[in-house]
Length: 97
Image 1 (tube, rainbow, N blue to C red):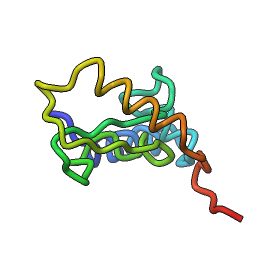
Image 2 (cartoon, rainbow, N blue to C red):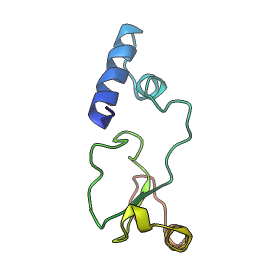
Image 3 (spheres, one colour):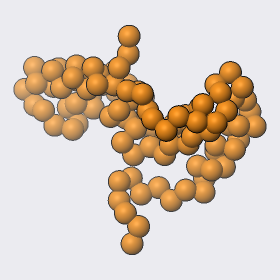
Image 4 (cartoon, rainbow, N blue to C red):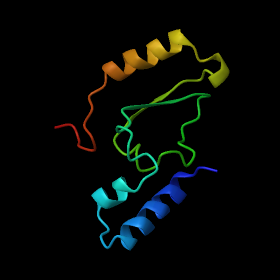
């Protein structure tokens, strides 16, 4: 049963066992270490929460929330999410100046 908190704890334990706790060592030990960083997370059902999902990996991701329920989420909704994503100013944790 996946949980983002448990994933971070597991990664930290592995990093500690390897003798070094840094962002890089934790990232190396995440379940998703072989997957590229998340650029866009699409949240269906209109819920404004991430539900303990990919907590570390979503740090700099753009989050798109749609009221459409997952079973009804199809190509037009994906297209809408991508268009919204393309219009964003990604700052990766920075602020506008």
